[in-house]
Each structure stands twice: as C-alpha cells, then as structure tokens.
Amino acid sequence: MQVNKTKKGSELYAAIEGRVDTTTAPQLDAALKDELSDITCLKLDFAAVNYISSAGLRVLLSLHKSMLHKGEMILLNVNQDLMGIFEVTGFVEILNIQ
Image (cartoon, rainbow, N blue to C red; front, side, top):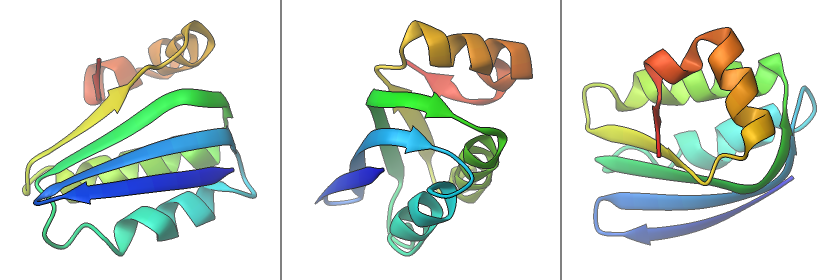
C-alpha cells in the first residue's frame, strides 16, 4: 500500500493505492494521524484501492472520529466492490462517500 499526500492550507488530500489490510492498515493510520492537527478537511481518494479488511475499516472509523469535531472526512472514487463492503457494514451511514 502507498499513500500519496498533498496538503493545501487546512485540507489534506491522500490518494491511497493497493490493499488496506491487517498489514497495511497501521501504516495508513500512522501516515495520516500525524498530519491531522491543523486539518479541517480530509479527502481520501480510494480510486486505486482494491481491497479493505476489518482492520482498514477500523482505521477509517478512527480517522472519522478524529475529524468529527474539526471538520469533515470525505471518501472519493470508491469502487463498487468496496462500496458493497461499506453498505454491508453500515459505513455508508457513517462516512461521507462521494
């Protein structure tokens, strides 16, 4: 998994590539959590994500909770397979998916 980040003012855009699984989820968490202190908008681009495990879902939930009082977190370009996972788990009700 790879995370390519771009910060513009108080917005952080992160393009994630590959699998977000038990091995890579902690890397995603570490790559983003350290940068959230002055961020009001976190945009996660999932165009190149082909799999997410329960560990990845936990990271998304944790990031969402971190952003609740600071601004917003938006998931972009989620493919149909991942959208199915988000629907089954109820994450479509929690996360802002565009």
